[in-house]
Amino acid sequence: MRTLALLLTGLLTALTASAANVPRPSPELTMQRGGAPPLQLSQFRGKIVALAFTQTTCEHCQTLTRTLKVIQKDYAARNVQIVECAFEEEASTNFPMFLKAFEPNFAAGYTTAAAVKQFLRWNDMADGMLMVPYMIFIDARGIIQGDFSGKDGFFGQSDKRIRGELDKLLKTSPKPAAKKK
Image (cartoon, rainbow, N blue to C red; front, side, top):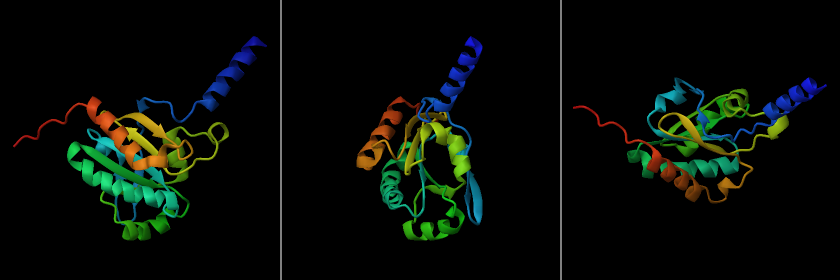
């Protein structure tokens, strides 16, 4: 009986392990871009990455996209890369129109909801519905240092909070190596 109780406790702990457990290594994520070559999240290793999971038709996500454009412009010279990944069922169809409408100045692509949930370690039973937008902050070593769901209030002052997370990571990240001439 005690063994069964321990097994059930372990299973319940595994199921309720929140997606927000940080720090943790960032898994790989592949994003499609229509006719362009796919993006690999690992190609930005060495940079601080602000990764936004969105839906192209979500009004809050579209507002975030506009905010991220300004932040990318302000932080690009500071070794920061913004990445946006749409994941609704129609993302492959909606993505070209989204690109045309919002013209992001940062890396953007789309993938499946299953791939996003695997990346986040999301469990619908334990974590509930995955709310967007959703932001992940990854340091230059590839370690997730921030994990913010669309339901946790982070996006109320998204510009200020995103900049705060990036500034915190910039203070603690090693400086990029100088390029050889």
